[in-house]
Length: 220
Image (tube, rainbow, N blue to C red; front, top):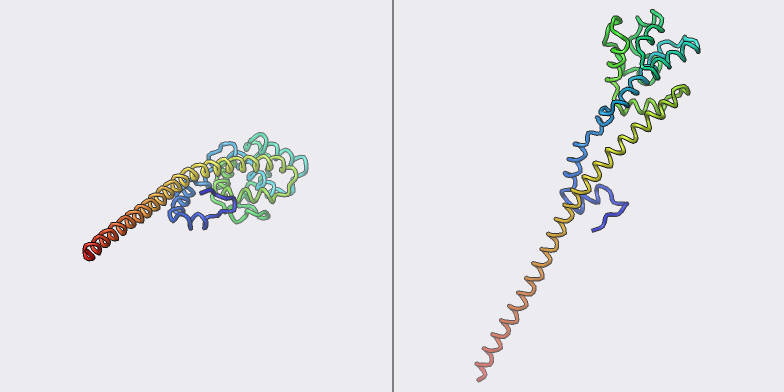
């Protein structure tokens, strides 16, 4: 049986009662929610983008030159020590979570002001699910960050697409095997049905022949 593009999960389930279990098994094992965490480049860029967005929000009074230096230190150099030195002392003491951007509810303070900025930012990034991070970046309006954001989004989509393709191929093999088993059972059932029909026909003919012979003896 050929699969059409329009077929959906209910279509497969109606054809093969065991399809839902196969689909759920491979979907759960895929762990798409952890796919991006395995990519060191994505994790690094996620940390830097979240950090710079957080720090810019907490230091909105920075001049354009200082702002550009902070972005360069965090995004392009990953130099959190230098970034921390750029922040006014008052801002260091107030690092208790962003107040004005979309992710503020996710960043409750859990570290002391004595901890390093990088350690704080890593803890912050770990609390943000990758899916939420991608949504935040898609809606980010800061034009200075857009080129890096676009690179991260492209990287994330490439990784997720590769994972989805791998799961689909594996699932397709399982479905194909299930389809083959289904067809074999259907053919066997059809052959057994035809065999029974043939046997019944022979039996009927045999009984008719016996009856005819019995009638012939009675006539004689």
